Amino acid sequence: MSSENDPYLAASAAARVLAKETGVVHHDVLIVLGSGWTPAADEFGAPTAEITVTNLPGFSAPAVAGHAGKLRSVRVGSLNVLLQLGRTHFYEKNDAQAVVHAVRTAIASGVKAVILTNAAGSLHSEWIPGTPVLIKDQINLTGGTPLVGARFVDVTEIYSKRLRDLARTIKPDLPEGVYTAFHGPQYETPAEIRMVKAIGGDLVGMSTALEAISAREGNAEVLGISLVTNLAAGMTGEKLNHEDVLAAGRQAASTMGKLLVEVVSKL
Ligand code: 8IG
Image (cartoon, rainbow, N blue to C red; front, side, top):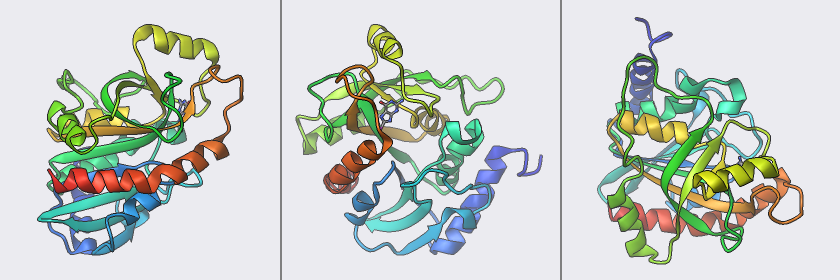
């Protein structure tokens, strides 16, 4: 199969260009940063290289304002860390392969730990905007999967207990929740949020779940952190506004970056 129809070959091809463009043969950690998280990336200091994703085969330009579409290579201790600024969402092209291409490329580059961050809606009124929440498990309601064919990937511990415990050595009061992924791009109706509550979800979002599945397929350990930027639909009496959501993300992004630097330093 050619790399055009084999997504794993496409990822290997992208990994070769990544190595060439960054001058880093292998990366150890991938950190995917959600919308408006550039201040979090800046906490890692000056990158050894920064590239625009569209210079790598198989990557498409992020469609949403506030999603930058850059990859930075930074050194943390002895680790080569790849920071992904902006991601492809399932709602952009209904293409689960495009959503996970960066994760597969990172794994083809040697990555053994994937940190997935996102901005999310909260079903707990005590988790106010600006609250970071560790993802302990997920419910994938996107209707999609990056896996094609008989790939029966085990996802019983999709978010690594070891990495969650490690994160709590840095910030012991980090709450944990179940991330419920929707296709989007519409936010939920109040009835959908009541359903999420009934099935055990704590957070709602439109990313992360397919990337986590793909990372586990590649045997990487996964840490997930949601930054709450809004209370879920129907909880406040207010409507959801994308600008407000982005602003809440920007405010908390540098705090999140400091936490991520500490986590990676302890990997
Ligand atoms: I930020 O309330 C953010 N992303 N599905 N619902 C969903 N995605 C989100 C939300 C939300 N807030």
